[in-house]
Image (cartoon, rainbow, N blue to C red; front, top):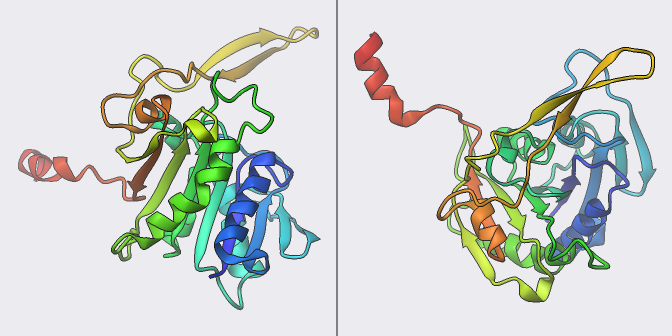
Length: 262
């Protein structure tokens, strides 16, 4: 098995080292290729660098940095770095912080997995929740590092795990904010929504020269996201696995809308 790994925290991010170790455990060091952003690209979602070229540099054997988004990195991996023998699996992460609930919609980590799925390549995004239970650990990615390979093996072994085109299934995995030994298990759950947070906000600030700058602000992450959903089970100590597709159609509304507008 050949694995392409990427992230949105950048080529030097500690979570990427954790992901490399997970991928090497699954497929062997010689079967892991890295194409990651040269600089942090958190919050860029499924953005692609459509209007300007992407510089790519080789950092080592099978290790490349691209000056672009995570989705750019997947495209670079498929059409340049691994063009002669494409990957069997794309892994994105391990993100520093959760990509549960509404965070999914902003995440560059998820954006890379979406790009892989659009191309028909099995793709899994992995993120490490942060909280009081793991912030002071020597390795805050401990839960992901210890349990990551096993979770991926179980996903790959599921019947028809990735489905068929045009919109194949990809997976969003979040590891709870606890030490590895305190992980209670794995739950397959839906994406949630933190009712009180409403996603990102904005704060104005004045520079010394009198010019106004606007800063994007986050929201508290320790709020559950509803029963049987990702953030809720993560905060309860479980790994969450959520199957997803890039098809944004609200299929449950199609028939009613037809009756109203056709």
